[in-house]
Every structure is written in structure tokens, then in C-alpha cells.
Image 1 (cartoon, rainbow, N blue to C red):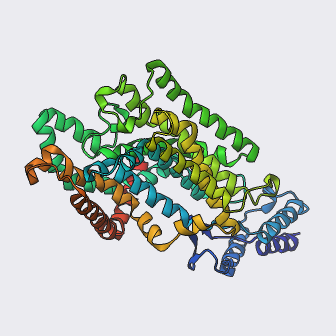
Image 2 (cartoon, helix red, strand yellow):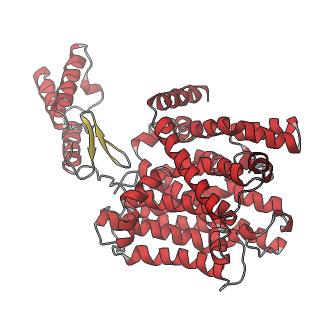
Image 3 (spheres, rainbow, N blue to C red):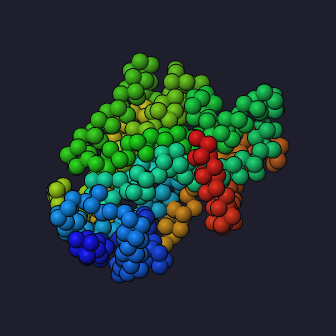
Length: 492
């Protein structure tokens, strides 16, 4: 009997294949290094099997009886051996790198920058109105954030979340996401703090400096509708995103467990949840304004509008919609969810034309003026997610898709890598050029004209490149961020 138990344990140790590869959004890392998508699969190391065998032998030497956890007769041993052999025969689906998403982020960031400051270049009316619709673009940013998070945190072709998500404490997972952008935010605040403090002192005094500084440093400004755009105004998005992402460790495992039918239903309910508060705002206050072109004093309920625009509670639905749409594409190779799917360039072209058509129709006056938030909730964000979904599916299936090919070109991918520092720094630099109080002190007045706007864009891109190279890619900064994640997670 003793010999039989050892023989069965040895058979089990040889039959179990341990896969140590970890799938990320852009490649596969293994104990032997990083392997790009498209390379030969990484083979499990035989040393891992030997280690498991030695562990089994050590357990027997210490008097641990396998019979306490495995029924006598070897039934469960043979079943485990068969199951693991089947699992090893069907390796995990790999995530391909969706380079078109980098191009999409680049175009979204460019639209935000132009939307905030293009008017100082004195463009024609159509361009001014086209790029002024930044409230729509922000919805796309929230949606793509949820899409990417789901892609990197759930399994391809399986109805489950990744081990990296489920095995990590919720607070640590959330902090790792937040600390990916917090240090850059702090650095830019520090660099431009003399300007921010000077502006507040000139208008209201030290109490305002203290309040606005605290809100900005802690990224809590999005919770205060009338203070969301203090100091570095565009970073209200980071504030809202940081706290919206706190729900993801709890929602993503549930979303990952859904089949396609449930995902479609959930997307529909999220669309409705996202729409209802906007309908309440529009109907109760009879607001049919194009907010990007409307002065704050003309809003009949500016605090309500700001709450729906900035507050994390109102932005969670778009993030979760991004996650459910991503899961639809990730389950295309799951036999239990096998459904017809579009794998041609029209699945990308049609929604993109719809998004551009919405922007152009509103800019040209072909459609009546209507609330940005209503247009964003009803049609723009759903069309944008259909566009991303089509690009995702075409990339995975290898279908011919000229739009995804264009979005994946080296220039846009490089620019997409700069989208975060561009987003963080374009607001403060815009104040240097265009805020009356600051520009008047530095240059004697606001710098109107296309030549100064070109100089502004050059300064934004140049500063973003420096921040990317010397800060975001700095190993010391990365190590410090990881340590702070551990420290804060332990404290929480």
C-alpha cells in the first residue's frame, strides 16, 4: 500500500502541468522573459514539475498522508490527472495588442486640447463648434477606460476574471490603478503651483488657496460640483475616474461571469441608468443648450449640470458599459457563446461615421440645439463603443480594416502613448497663454492668433515628451509608486 501511494503521487506530479505565464494587455511575460504576441507559445518549464514532485516526496517524509484529502482507491487522483491534462492540451487564449486603441486615445486627447483652447486661434464657426463638444469626448474617455480595464483584467474566451484581479485585495488593485496617474498629477501641480496660488490670492485670498489646493492634491474636486475645475481644470476627469474605478474589483468578476445574452441585457440597463439622470436634468430645467458653447451664467441650473458632468456617481455607468462591451468581443471564441459577429471593415466604419456625423451635424446647425449630456448618453457613447468593439473584433480575427490600420500607424500609436501627459499638462500651459490674469502679467495680454496657438501646441507636446521620458519612464518613480501602493493598501 505504501508503494502504491508513492506511485500514484509520482504519477500525479508528472501529469499536472503548471502554467506560469501571465497574460497582459500587450504581451505575455514568463519566468524566461517577455514574449510578444505572435511568438511561439511559452512551454512550461520542466523544473516546475520536478519541484512539485520533490514537494510531494517531502510531504511524505514528514508523515503527511494524501489519503486525508484524497479518497482511497485513487478515483480523485485519476480525475484530477485527466482534467489537468485536458486543460494543458487547450492553452489559454492570448490577448492580442489592440494598437488601434492607442490611436483612438491620441485623437480623443487632441480633440480635448483643441476643444479647450482652439478659440484663441480664431477658427471659423464650424471648427469652433465641432471641437467645442468636449463633453461628448469625455464620455468616450470614460467608456474606453472601462473597456481597457476589462480587457486587461478578465480572461479571453472564458467567463471569469483574471487571477491578477481576483487574487489581489480590492484596495490594492484600486490603488495600483490610481497610482499610475497620481504621481504625474502631483508633479504638474508642484511645477505650476506658483501660478495657481497667485491666481487664487489675486481673486479671493488664502482660504481659497487652502481649499482649492487640498481638493486638487487629493483629487477630490469632482465631488464638489462648483469646485471641480479648480487649479488644473481638466484633471477633474482624473478625480472622477479615480473614485469611479473603486467599484471595478467588485463589478468586474460578476461581469466576467456573464454570457453574451446577459452582457447585452446589462449594457442596456447601464445605458438606461446613464440616461435617466440626464433626462431629469433636461426636462426639469427645460435645458436644451449646447453646453460647450454656453457661458456658465446662462445655465438655469449650473450646479445640477456640473454634478452630472463631474461627479463619480454619474460616470460609473459609462465605465461599466465599456467593460460589458469589451467582454462581448472577448467571448467570441467561447464555444458556449458562439454567435455571429461582424468581422469586416463596415463594423468599424459605420459607428465611426455615426460619431463624426453627430459632431458635424451639431457643428453645422443641421440639427436643433440639444444638451451635450443628452446627446452623449443617448447616441454618442453607444456609437463610440460599437466603433471600439468593431475594431477589437477585426484586429483579433485579422479582417481587413483600413480604419484600424490607420489608427495603428506608428505616429498615432506614439501620440497615444503621450495622451496622458498631454492631457495633464495642456490645462496649465493654456493658462500661461490664455488666462487673462496670468497672460496679462506675463505677456501684457492674452495671446490671440494662430501663430501663438501653434506655439502653445508645440509647448504642450514638448512638455509631454519630457514628462514621459524623464518621469513616467523613470524606474525610480515606478519603484516609489509600487511601494506606496503597498503602504497605502496595508493602511487601508
